[in-house]
Length: 434
Image (tube, rainbow, N blue to C red; front, top):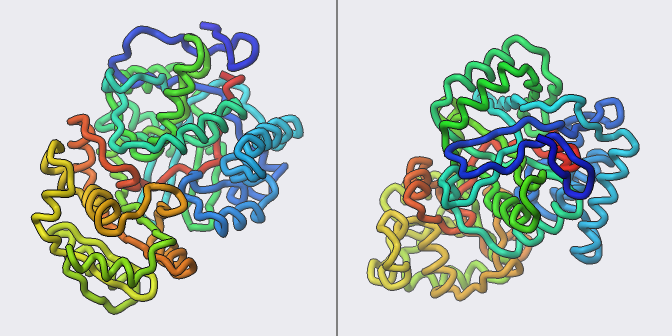
């Protein structure tokens, strides 16, 4: 069915149907870098916008290639409005100059990542957006309104989905067969290795029979958001702001069958740049047992893992490493909301935010006071640089996340980091293209 693009003529994109009972993945014309116009495909990619450590990581990516996608997903400018306008101008210029070009035919893309011995394969497509009440896509974390508004402004200005979300589902054998057959017997559109050593390959599925197999199989599944809660909330916000039957009814996602390709689950750490480590330790001693640990970081993280197996534990770092464990039960009971289920009340992130951040340290819930960093070493370095405190967490098990999601219980925001995450810049979706 032909429908209207964001600001242009009719496009061939499925219309908004009635209630959806499963995943509906549509092909789209991928917007991709033209290899001859860039230094290398590896040099124009980036981690997802919220994983880039700013400003150092951002500057590193910007200097890797003048066309690095970080200039679109993290644009610079004196104001937020000018940043978003600048990203829109940059995207339009790159398309006009042939740096980016749309594939000639709509496709669902097979995407493979190989990180050491860890192989992950999935499909990238335009997913029909559904409200939480339909239970098709399950979030597991709360979101912050600021990042949702910021991503919405950027997406609206560029008229594009610049990077895919990561969703997981389970036991899609027909789709897995199509994916593996494509990866084994077809030459990829893209094959590159990024500087972190991860190999990326991308294929386009355009055969009607293959597309029908994937569409039919996924229609019987639900998915959980592994990475990209703020962007999913952004998709829904923008869909609600537009009339039905437009390209805004769909969002760019990567779907991975976690039964076949289990994802890694890592913690997301906190850096408190305005809280000196000694002050944090002094206040925490009233609630936790505090022990100083010997480095290096890997050894300290090992001690954290052992302590976390027995209960809530945190590793404080900056000038040295210090383990917090064995919290006072009465303080836990008083701080963590009692209306929540017990498994939620035991989450490290829940204890961190409700007990340590809110009551013990009284750290405001604001970007100037709390930074979220995925890499432990980077978090420690940022804390040292600012004379602050890094709070390192142990990862939550995937099964706990899934059980809470199915029960409709939202974890504290930035509780988990699933991966490998899709590299940004390999394939984008221009909403004017469908």
